[in-house]
Image (cartoon, one colour):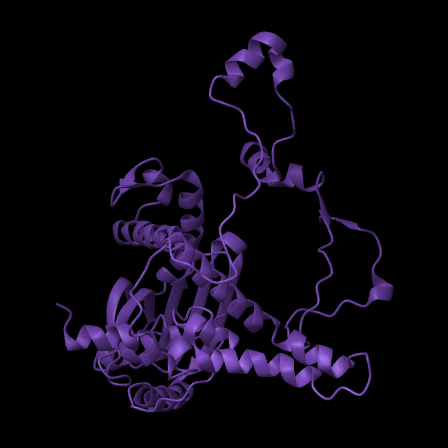
Length: 375
């Protein structure tokens, strides 16, 4: 039987803070939906467990390759990526007065019954700095340290718990996302953190109230379990499209109307995907959904188990296609300096993003060779 504290934790957890802080109404709407996991979530949990063991025991991740942790095998790929996180932490560990890893943090001083588990935290007593480290093993969504609410809640809890031991004046939040080479860092003062605390406390009270307001948006709707059934999100996305095409005098849409649709592209796509998943799950249960049905999708042929042996007898080495090993594999066998002069980096595909994106703008008239020599 789950107790009251755990129920509030489930509602107002640090990991889901980007949702309930931005859309307080989502908390009660999600109550009827069961918790669920996925292969991606379980993979992330395993990576965190490996990192925790290695940091606590001062070991490297390759020690656990092909070994089991909680009945799951650690692959070489996972060990390599987790080691990137471990090495990142160790660069700060030598300056630390305290290191915490996979530590329960109570931030109920800000959010009612709020607690969670911080991946790693380091306190540098000499410069009065608290470092919060968050390992993101996923590669689907890039996570930024700037204004990261999950890490700020952990910081509030840790400072409250350790205020009699350490005089912390600054906080640095680190996001380590090794599978997409994303290393993001952001600093915040105690004064700024206290301002966030006021905001978080206010939003928490709203989320637990009877008439909590809804506020659809990409960040808060992305991981919301209720988005397929959310009438507010339906109205919001419907209005975005409808308002752009109502009362159009011309047969063509304006650039401003196109921009409005593009500004909300990700949210609209999220909503459509959630509806598709809802219909899929309904049909998978054997239920009906008017106008839709299951059909067999297309698939490609693949070799049966005994194909390799047969083809080797018939074709010999011609049964295989040969190709160069990857650059990463070569760098493990040959020095990186030797490899560098042999590599070319193709220019990334031009991508349309909003003007607020931090990446440097590319002028079309300055695009030259498709490749650039790596130096």
